[in-house]
Structure formats: structure tokens, C-alpha cells
Amino acid sequence: MLKNNIIKSVLFALVALVYTNSLNAETSHKADVNHEENHEATSKDEKYDPIPVIMHHIADAHDWHLFDYNGHSYSMPLPIILWTDNGLVTFMSSAFHHDDAGHHLVEKNGMSFVKVHGKIYQLEAGAIEASFDEAHHITNGVRPIDLSITKNVFSMLMSVLIILFIFIKTASHYTKNGAVAPKGIASWMEPLILFVRDDIAKVNIGEKKYAKFMPYLLTIFFFIWFNNLLGLIPWIGGANLTGNIAVTLVLAVFTLLVTNLNGNKAYWGHIFWMPGAPIPVKIMLMPIELVGVLTKPFALMVRLFANITAGHIIVLSLISLIFIFKNAGMGAVSVPFALFISVLELLVAFLQAYVFTMLSALFIGTAVADHH
Amino acid sequence: MDNPLVTPELGLIVWTTIVFCILFFLLAKFAWKPILKAVKEREVSIEDALASAEKATRKMEELQANNEVLLNEARVERDAMLKEAREVKDKIIAEAKVTANAEGDKIIAAAKETINHEKLAAITELKNQVATLSIEIAEKILKDELSSADKQKAMIDNVVKDINLN
Image 1 (cartoon, chains in turn brown, red):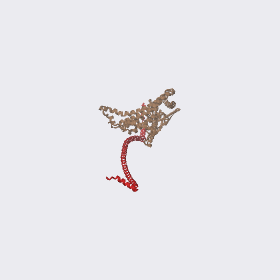
Image 2 (tube, rainbow over the protein chains, first blue to last red):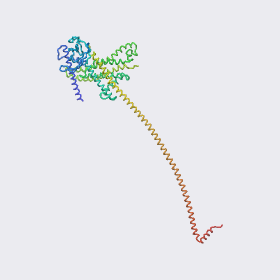
Image 3 (cartoon, rainbow over the protein chains, first blue to last red):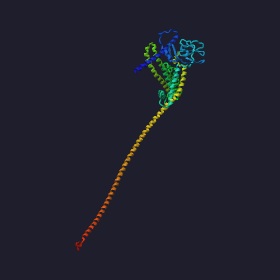
Image 4 (cartoon, chains in turn orange, cyan):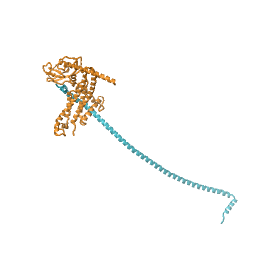
């Protein structure tokens, strides 16, 4: 048992080492870029700043960075899709040659594009290079509508394929064998589906009306959970999809729509004309309740975003300690801590999917509940 | 500068909306519908099976109770039959005894009568034989007595002597 544990921890330390190395390489690459920008002499004793690394990791990107080797960046190029004033422009992200500081111009359809901090700018006609103001804002470019398959979109597509594969396979077990006991992958997924049905939908929406909302609740639960888990895997997952405010915004808006499109008379009655309250209070409550309609999904959006992003930041911060102290010995402290947080994040991945689904069900439940 | 962390990107919003909608419709049609239907069916069939099992148990109990009643009835009937049989037996035996006694008495009476008859017949015969014998004896004696004239005379004398002419 003990021997087994030792082997496991050694393996984990190795994996962590490889992981941190790749981070390190990424940092040095970033640092180089920063130096180029500032035209400063590089100094070996420069303090390591973990913030850009962490921010870079949790932000979206136009390519999937894999690792650096001998000063070269290796990443998987992803398609860039831009809607400009002159129409659709598409090319691969490799056209930027890993440039993220606006130095490398990509010429397409008579327009030139640069990438700065993960965002693509279309330079004004005739501009031969990007110019920046004091705050490092680009001054001679505008952002076209960027519909690129970014790292997050790519990761989302992967998760969708995985989810579809798993659940269509689960469904085929039942279509093939009829209403029998689950087996294989179905026996893994059925308890979770029943959990969503019995402990989330039935409890919050009620026995009579829950069935209509089951597809939405199941989809949102597994979408969030699978993407939370994928985000925890370095390299192959690692995209911070559910920790991206745009994604959580969309999910929260869906809950907002599902809740309010299904709201019954009693629900709207409670918002606009609170029954049982004196008239001045009714008038006072109306704007508060109206704001409440929006704050509920807003809280959903922020909760998921903040929890998942925080998890990523903590793990990266712990690993960064090794580079801040410039001491591999720190790994003895960082690695177990990062392991602990990673395991905790596994729990958080499930918990946040549960909380988002549960609160969605609760909001839907209040919107469709019968009042006497 | 606005923080990129909390600034939603339009591209990702668009893609998430599209992808989530597609995922929702595909899963709803090809996964959730068959899965939930099968699970529901299974639950219903399990519930039915449990209910019917309970029904069967109750029926069994009922049957067992019925059996008990039947058994009791049968037992009572058997007892009654046995009692009746015993009574019949006793009656038959009693009757047989009575008949046998009567028959016996009759036979004894008949026997007695026969014996009496036989006795009377025997006595009569004996009497007849005795009479015959007596006659024969008397004949012989007479013959013997009356074989000679002397004797005849003596005889007559004797008889005459006995006869008293009163």
C-alpha cells in the first residue's frame, strides 16, 4: 500500500514537473516578447512574474499552445474567422507565427491583421505596422467581428463530441435492449441522470411539471460538468471554458429565457404586484423584483465563472511558486498542494455543475409553481 | 483598460450559443428522450412487478386462510362422519346382538320342542316296545304255562282262586 503510494506520488511529481516546464517555457517566451516590446536588456536575475502566465492560461487564445522547445513555440493552429467591412476573412492562426504583440502583419484580401494580447485587430488601410499609445492600446486598428475557432471553442466542440458519444451510446443501450437494467457506460451515466431527475428537477420543479425541463437541465448539467473536468486536464484539455465569462453568460441567459418564457400568471403577479402587501410596498417591490429577475442568472454567471477560474488560478499559482523562488525544492511543497487543490477541483467541477443546474431548476420551479 | 477576464468576447458568445443549442437538440432527441423513456418504463414495470408480487402474496395468504377453513370443515366433517360411522356400527352391533339373541332363543326353543317331541316319541316307542315285550313275555309265559293240561288247570285254579266271588 505504502509502496504503491510512493510510486504514485513519484509519478505525479514527474507529471507536474513536465507540466511546470511547459509553463516555464511559455513564460520565458512571453518574457522575451515583453523585452522586445520594451527594448530593454534582458537580465537573468529578473524577477519572475506569475500574473501574465496565469492570465494567459485562463484567457482564450487563437491557437492551442502545446510546449516550447529550444526557444521555439509548438502549438496547434486553429482557424481564424473574421467578419470585416469587406466580408469574411479566414486563415489559420499559424499565420501569426506565435506573435501576440502586434508585430507580425497578416495580409489577407488587401487587409492587414495583427494579434495583440489574444485579440485580432484590422489595421487601417495603408498602415505598415501597429502603433500603440501609452497604455499599450492599439491606435491604428479596429477589431473586426471575431468568430474564430479559438482554444475555448475548439475545446467546447471536443467536449460536445465526447458528451454526444457517451450519451448516444447510453441511449443505444436502452433502445437495443428495452427498459432493462443499465450496463456498461449506461450504468455510469444512469445514476447521474437519475440524480438530476430526482434530486434536482423533481425536488425544485415538482412531480407534475419537471418532465418538460429535464432535457434542458440534463444538457446544462453535463455540459458544465464535462467542460469543468476537461479544463482540469493539462495540455489536452486545459482550456478554461467554464471559467470564461462569455460561456457562463450564455448559459445564464439560457436559464433566464427558460425561466421567464415559462413563467405563469402567479410568477409575474409576484413580480409586478406582490400579493398580500400594502400598495406602497407593492410599488416599492416591483423594481426590486424586476432587478431580481436579472440578478438571479447574473449570480449564476458569476458563480460558475469565478469558481472555475479561481481553481485554475490557485493551481497555477502553486506551481508558479517553484519559479518565484527559483528553487526546484519548492516542488516538494507546491506539488502536494497543487495535487490537493486539483482533487478539490474535481469536487468543485461536480459541485458547480450541480449548483448551476439546481439553481436553474429552482428558478424554473418558482416560475411554474402553482400558487393557491 | 477593461479587464479581459470579465469582458465577454462576442465570438465565444456566438459559438457557445450555437454549439449549446445544437448539443441540446441532439441530446434531447437522441439521448434524453430514449434514456428517460426507458428508465420510466423500467420503473413502471418494477412498480407493477412489486404490486403484482404483493397481490400474489395477499392471494396466497387468502388461499391459505381458505385452506385453513376448508381443512377445518373437512376435519369437522370427518369427525362427524366418524361419529356417525361409530353410531351406525354400534347400532348394527346392537341390532345384530338383538337379532342373534332372538334367533338363538328361537333355535333354543325349537330345539327344546324337538327334544320334547323326540322324548315323547321315544317314551311312546319305549312304552309300545315295553307293551310288545310284555305281551311277548306274557305269550311265552302263557304258552309255557298252558303247555300241559295240568298246568292249564292249575292256572285256572289259581285265577279262579284269586277271583273271589263276592
